[in-house]
Length: 189
Image (cartoon, rainbow, N blue to C red; front, top):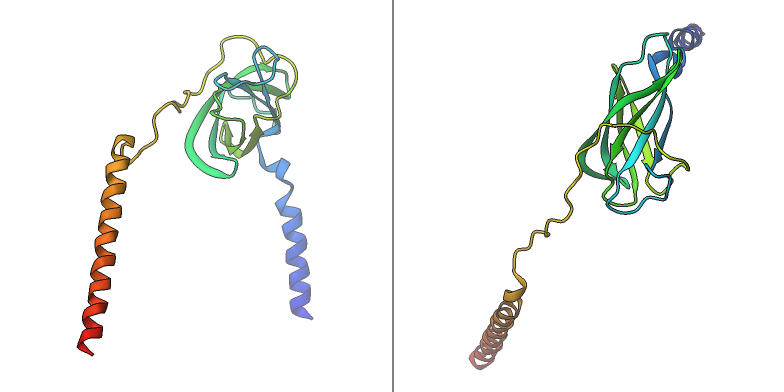
């Protein structure tokens, strides 16, 4: 009975002391959206504007800059891509951060968002662009990824035919050697 009372007391104290997730953040993220500069659907090779709406939960002034770090593409790990964000508008309680991101394909991107000392999870999908034009002005931009590099290959295409002929010849010699060995074993018995 004593254990039950202690367990119930600890559970209630955790609820009272723990508070909610909204109480824990100084700069809380309300929404994350993607918009194009011209309000049109996204096309490959063009940047999108990452727009983050945040509120100041503790009445603190919003910092002038933030950063989004993209770490996954459609659930697969990728090179960490930093998207610098700048405060483009604010009122007393919240503001909008924006920065340019160069998606290398239409996908869902996951990562972390840091505004001030608060770090939160971030998810956005290039396939879900919000209608309307993005905030105007000179926005900070992420470094575009160069996806034009040729993939790493171990054999040049001009060497495929000689390599295939050499492999075929090798396996033919192995087959002849095994067949000859069988013949020798039969003769010995």
